[in-house]
Image 1 (cartoon, one colour):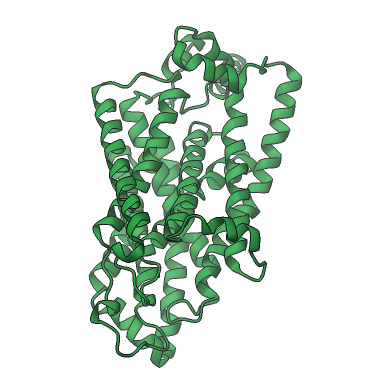
Image 2: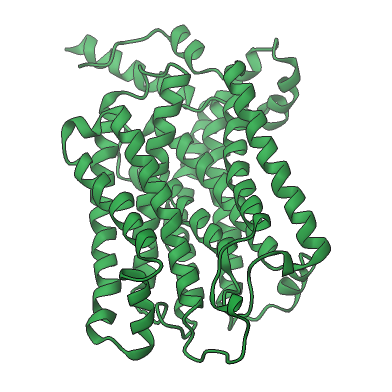
Length: 439
C-alpha cells in the first residue's frame, strides 16, 4: 500500500516531541527507581569493596563485563543504520536513523560507566589514562570507545540541527526552549549550512564504520589475547562484530514497534520498514550463526583436554539450558519466524527483537563466566564458592540500573527531541509530491 501524502503542518505536528502521559510518567518513575537501587548497590560496593559481589579469583569479571560487552555490541546499530545504509543510498531508513543513533550513544555511555564500576576503585581510572601502556588491549579499548562515542554523538547532533529551527518556533515550551536555543540557535537553514552539514555527516559516516569495527574487534581481543579455554580463538573479532550487528538490529526492531505504537507513527514507520528490517535481521542472523558454528565446531572437533570440560559444561552440563536457550531462542527461532512475510509484521518483529536482545545478553554472560571457571591452571585448596559464580543482589542491581539508565536516556531524549527527523521527512515528502505531479 502506498504511503499517503501528508501536509507539512501534519508532519510537524505528528513528529514534534510529546508530553508524557500517565504511562510515560509511570515508565520513567520505574526506570528511575531501578537506577536509584543500582546507585545504592554501587554505594555499598564502594564502601565495603568488591567482597559484596560474588566475584572471586576464578570469576573475576562476572556480570559487569557481560554488561559491558552487551552495551558495546548494541551500540554498533548506529553505524549499521546511520552510516552503512546512508552511504549505500538507502532512503527508506531515514525514520530509523535517529532511533539507531540514540540507542548507540546511550549504550556506549553506559558501557564506559560499567567498566569503571568493574574496576572496584574508580580513582584507578585516572592511573589507567596516566600510566596506560599501548601494549595492553585495555588501552586500545579506551581509545576506540572514546572515539566511537564522540563520532556517534556528532552523528546524533548534526542531523538534529535542521529540526532545531522548528523546535525553537514552539516558544510555549519554556522549560526546554533555553536548551533548544543553546544547542541550535545558530542554525538558520541557509544553503551554506546545509552543504557543510551534509559534508560533515558523510565524513562522519565514513569514519564511524572502521571505528565501529575496531571497537568490537578490540573488545574481542580483551578475551582472545588471554590464554584461556573458550577464548583461545582467532575467530573472535568477526564473531563479536556479527553478533553486534544482530543484537543492534533486534534493538531497533523493538524501538520501531514501541515508538510507532505509543506515538502513533504508522504513517512514518510503516509495515514496509518492518519488512525490510526483518530481511536485514535474517541476513545478520545467518552470518552470526555461521560464526557460532565455526567458534564451537573447530575446538569440539580437536577436543583439547582443557577445552573439553568447558565445552561439555556449555553443551550438556550446568550451563547447557542457558546456552541452548540463547542459541535457539535468541537466534534460530527468530530467524525462522522472520523468514515468513507474516513474521515480518510489527508484532512478530517486536517479539523476535526481544528474543534476540535477551538471548544476546545471556550469550555475553556465557562468553565470560564459564570460561573464567575453567582455567588452564586451577587453583588448589580454594573454597568451593570460588568454583561457582552467581551474581549477588548488588551485582544484579547495578547491572539492572545500567540497563535502566540506557532506557532512561532514550526516554528523556524522546521527550525533548523528535525521534524521527522532521526536516528530512519534509524533504522526502516534497520529492514524492513532485514525482507524482510529474507522472
